[in-house]
Amino acid sequence: MGKRILVFLLFVFALIAVFYFFLARLSLDNYPVRGIDVSHHQGEIDWHKIKSQNISFAYIKATEGGDFKDPQFKKNWDHALEAGLRVGAYHFSGLKRTVCCRQKTLSVRCPNIKTCYLRQ
Image 1 (tube, rainbow, N blue to C red):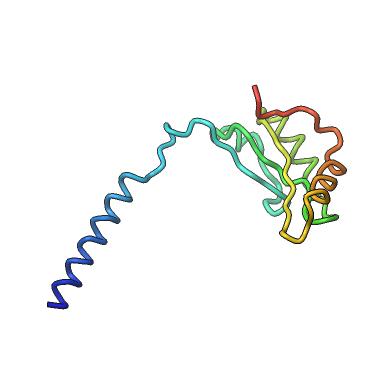
Image 2 (cartoon, rainbow, N blue to C red; image 1 turned 180 degrees about the vertical axis):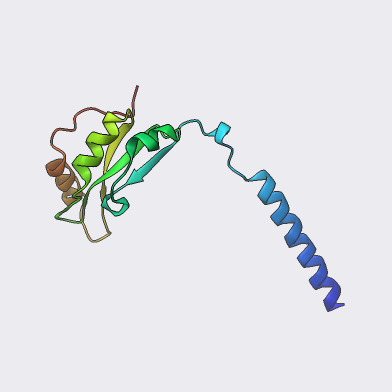
């Protein structure tokens, strides 16, 4: 009796896996707006190649914690704009930082960002 239950459960699991694979796949047609997030961890980025891969926007890491400034931020920001992408900055924070600290860090790092590039 136990062997039959095990076979049945394996069959049900396999059936669910097959349906999930075919029904839950993301279709590029269903998501026409695509973007990425980057930081200094990605190193040098070929922004024109990114743009050619149907990526339309990028969130770029500006700051982290209380005092870390991403050394690639300005370069990534400028080159992404030059390539024709819309851009946004983000602050990476842990739970130990206050909201005030996070907002202050981002505004100090990005004082000239006055336009919301993601809106039309």
